[in-house]
Figure 1 (tube, rainbow, N blue to C red):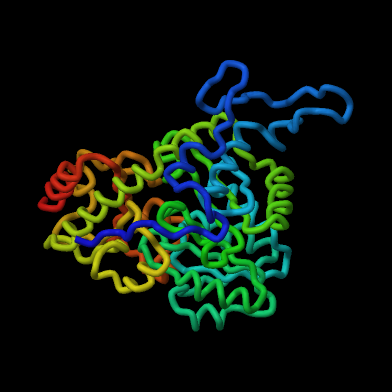
Figure 2 (tube, rainbow, N blue to C red):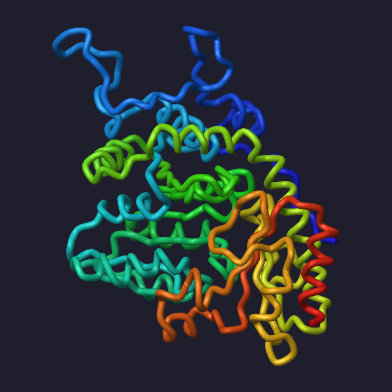
Length: 396
């Protein structure tokens, strides 16, 4: 059985800092001086009063800043090794804010197998505002180099990709971009900072849907933008405030609470996902399995180089001539047919009709997604129960 290597690396931003397990629990935890609460208080206020004209305690209006939100931002920045962080109302809000670094006439290079919601935002919204996009095979450095033009201002990287778990060479692609003075943004949602830290490879900005693993309980939506330097942070904070996409205090508190258990959850997700991937790979009614932890993954060397773990998401191709989709989904007991991922409960979905449907048939086929592709977000339940459940559904 494959195993993830122990995370012994220290980010250049995190030298001499506490272990990530300690940071998840203690960073950004503002102590309550009024009643000595051990958890960060929630400040559910829209506005803050001034002690006098021009004099306050650092906050004036919650859209612009809130102590609970600041606590979460400090925590996530520390985990990723960034210079600062802004948390947003959704993951798509974070992506939207980052795109406002650009202007009409600018060009973006990104993968042809990215999350469907990101693809939709790029292709159907920002493309109408004079920003052009090339959706390419990001696994091929030659394709990336060819796609970068004098108008290219951003390279958008999603690794592992959603849902086929393709791996982009962070050092190689970021190096190509830097040589042309192009900004690089990495969506690190699938692995979390526990299993991958893009700043170690020179990324300029990292984004997350905190809805997923950082929160981990499927009870809130949110996003995060982590900045590689203070100049990017200054601009990013302005954009988040001006666009009005900052996260509500209670939602920020939920994510901060969830992060405290990030490490044990990610380890449990990964252990279960690896066992299930190995089970599926041997099943007669499964055509192919996509999971970075499998020895059969074609990018094993790159995975070892830039990841310290494999995550909890896998996908597979179902032999629908043997097991039709509808009966398969209906027979499942512990896997809920639902979009999203990263929660403690196991979820399963059909990207062609669900999470990636907005891409359209042509883009879906170009990305490698088929009508037989099934994505699984493996939870932390007992792995024997999960394997038995899948086995019953696969056996018809």
